[in-house]
Image 1: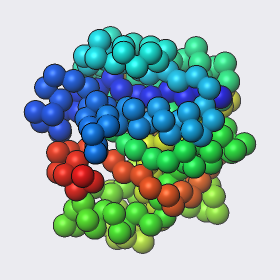
Image 2 (image 1 turned 120 degrees about the vertical axis):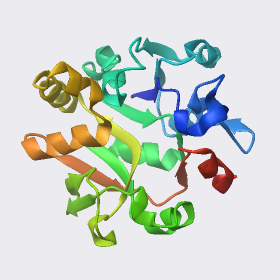
Image 3 (image 1 turned 180 degrees about the vertical axis):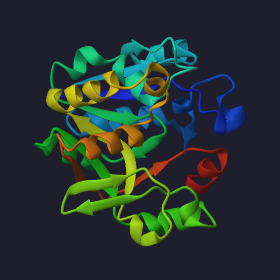
Image 4 (image 1 turned 90 degrees about the vertical axis):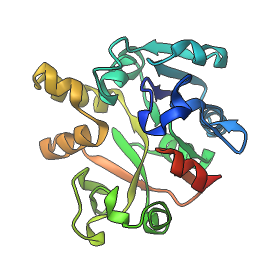
Length: 236
């Protein structure tokens, strides 16, 4: 199975840490996030890894991954970057990883074992981590509601903790059928809206359309998201 790492954006919330390099090269305990992702993906059984580049793409070439480039990375969002890897997504199942997260091979194994056309990992115990990251855990949380293992809501602003049954991690999997539904929905959007669409917004549209279920896989091993310099200090 293949995996695609989304690394086109700069990560401006990291401030000076990304002035000269992409966010995924930020080091955690002396190792770049990208190196951690590669190790986890390979440890989870991934045979081929691609990366969608944009900002400072030359910095990522030494890792020897298959490159897909989004030349419009400054004006488009993550889903448009993923579309740059369309040739892989139409060819077979692909795991997709954000580039500002770290996780264990067990998360990859969960996704590899899934038979769903769209599957996402989530952390049911998110509140403990978010309480350390934020004074108000709901400040950066999004709704995540389930019916069994089927996601019925994602990506909205929660009013209460009960609306967040898990934390979406930025690690997911598409089969060609799942990706075809992504492309169908994107094709119906005006260009400006299509370019602005982020991943949870896209997943929300897929859920609303009701044609392809989005399945949730509970993951309880180590992981984290480095979105700001404060996050980095916390995980260090």
